[in-house]
Image (cartoon, rainbow, N blue to C red; front, side):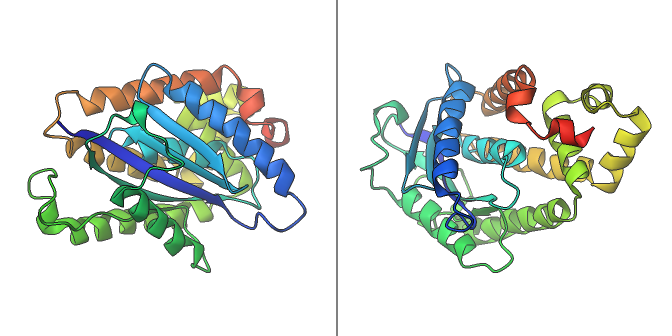
Length: 264
């Protein structure tokens, strides 16, 4: 029996500039603990913080790594040092709980590394990039290998278009988008920021919040749909994970969004 998993390898942009390395390293240690809390008792996950500014996550579920990466990108505190994520997914024979990520050698780790290296070389860097297997003899969702390259291309095109929309957001539009992801209601975002509902609505519209979050959820849904050979309901697991993240973050908004005061 194989286990569906996903992987991300995260680096931080410009981490060697501004004499901020130690501060970022401490922040990544904090994020490591937060991811563990987000996924606890919901989805088996291995997390390791290494090489100063690198975070590696291996988790059950094709959509889990991207889900975690997207939420991390929205709660990230350092605007001048944004994270970027090389991603992959597939099936393994091992149990995630038994993996030692520091020493684990697997094609999925290589693909995530190569996806991360692809982003590293970009001048106008996106935050997310997938690299997928193209092994005709590997077990995978029916029909997936036949169109693996095309699927990878389409997936990354969606993420690139989403990135362009996020790059166009002003600081307050980005904050409103992130808070709406967590709180899910405009009136709650309005109350949180001390701004009128119409102002929040305007920021959402101009910042294309609906389009950005719709693209995110569509990618999650598609990745979930590929888990056709496994008994667990991937959609239910994804919803449970997101619900848990939103609940934890909403209960600690000041900790996750120290810039909220500045947004008022």
